[in-house]
Image 1: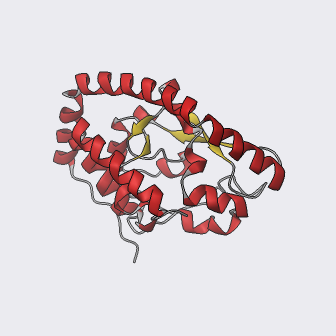
Image 2: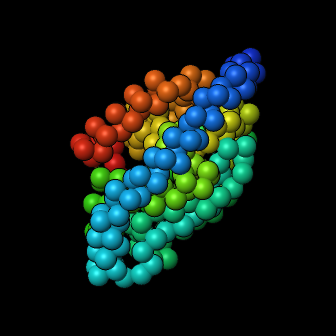
Image 3: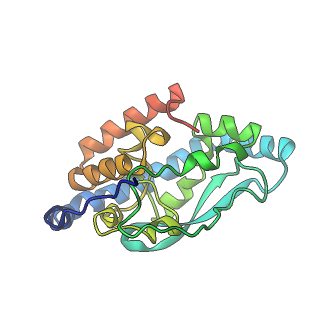
Length: 224
């Protein structure tokens, strides 16, 4: 039997109040996102060029993959990644779902598309190099360095009120769920960690996530 996400109305109201109290934090965080994304784009330019040439030589064009995602306050934007999947197989297939009370907690999305990853794409994903183009999304203000990962519209469409809370803050390149299992956790666990971040976001927690992310990337832990 499919497990359904539970809705806690009191918890929802509590998180809304907490987020509104973090205005100064979000202003400073935006400033740091701008400085950090510009610095990393410059620092990682050689890696960006090498990755671009490698994809062109071994996989052909296009080099980049773009997809619609849902960000803060349910606003849609185009996310950018280095292409890691075979052509004509990188787009999300829409399928009729019968979810009526949110996305099921036991739902796992990535496992259904892993077989379409290219040989080069496997290594790009293993060390999260495919995520580098999202620095542009951060610079534009569509994303932040730290936050819940942006979801596709087809999944957000089925969110219940509880799951919608992860959209109270900007999505991130990495987040609390990513350093606590990444692709090895189901949707319910991801929502749990995302909401825990939304409720407790701070510079201290962001710093912790950054260091844990670096360790995860070096170990290639939880990558697909």
